[in-house]
Image 1 (tube, helix red, strand yellow):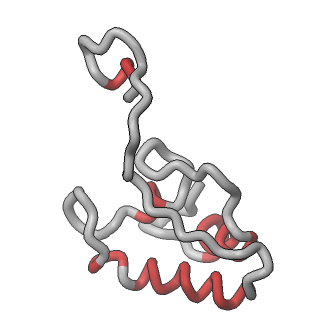
Image 2 (cartoon, rainbow, N blue to C red; image 1 turned 90 degrees about the vertical axis):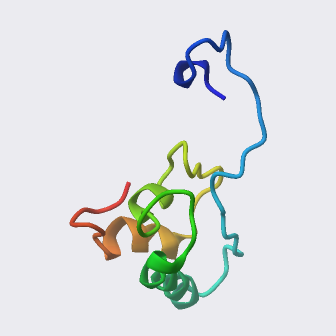
Image 3 (cartoon, rainbow, N blue to C red; image 1 turned 135 degrees about the horizontal axis):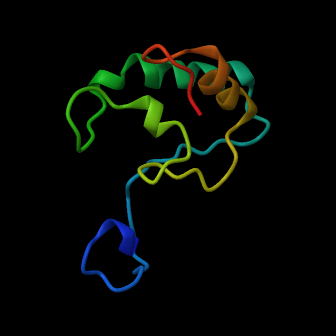
Length: 94
């Protein structure tokens, strides 16, 4: 937990967290399969449970944020999908 987010916490405290839910695939996975999976997440975002209100905020969940860190690179097709292919909420991701 970063001390900057919690007044009174004297220093950063390493913790376990399940704030993101990565989906891993092999680098050689077909691009159409990966793009289809991304599209399915987008189409179902209003039915994917999460701790906040409303639909899953893909603009925050598909970019490198404290809520959903990306410790490894996205598959090239997923990167293109989220970065270029679908402007969500009127804007592109990342």
